[in-house]
Length: 144
Length: 144
DNA sequence: TTAATCCCTATTGACTAGATAGAGATTTAG
DNA sequence: CTAAATCTCTATCTAGTCAATAGGGATTAA
Image (tube, rainbow over all chains, first blue to last red; front, side, top):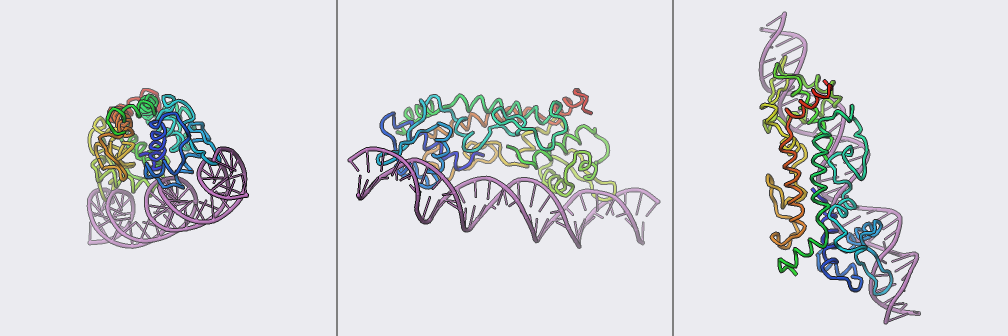
């Protein structure tokens, strides 16, 4: 299951993506419209900023905007920031590989083989879905 | 990431599957060979028993054996017991559907559409891998 | 220079993961 | 019959994480 943080992050980013390329948007506006606790959202956006997914503009009339084109921000990108690796086991993570603590012999592990296949399948999907495709779906559904 | 409990469960079940169909195996033997904390394993096997994945035999010379043929116990079956639904969101879980707490309108949710595709991909993999295929891999690798 | 914004650190409460302890119930070997 | 070996159950503990909140400090536009 993804965390609440991930949900909020995705909703906030979709809000930014749907609102077009104009001026930066304030935290409070996003929080209001998407019903996200303001202070929590602050922390989330800060993290997203560190990885370049959003950009911030400080001072009066500041706010947040996407750090790169919506089509270049995938669901996988976002989930990796909020929830860590997509993989079901450290030993099959591509972005954050680590040997399992109690692993006998990785090359022979039957559990690993299955989890590796699962990771590839999930990553394939989540890397192909991005903010642009998602925003387009919303527009098509008349949810905007 | 899967839990430690899931890891232990899979290892214990693979041990049972690899050991063939003979007499029940004692918790202590599994714990020793697989280096799993004995008491923890006890609790895990108890849960697996409630769902029919293993069967227990009480009393002296008792122990545990698989509850059905190894080929009918998938990785998905096991993970659902130890870690809950495979889905990344309750609203895309097939076995344990639940509306998201703060969902505006499910039919229009762009996040849901992506998570649904991810779930289907993961489930497809994890339901096709079972204890028999995994044990066969082990044998082939000479890990037995 | 003031007011609106983002930035940072700390803290809280609830919950869960992982592990352990100790006694109870059941069955079989002798 | 009885003793020993097993599974069964309930309770507990510690450390860590999740979600949220608080209260200022730094920055910049009007």
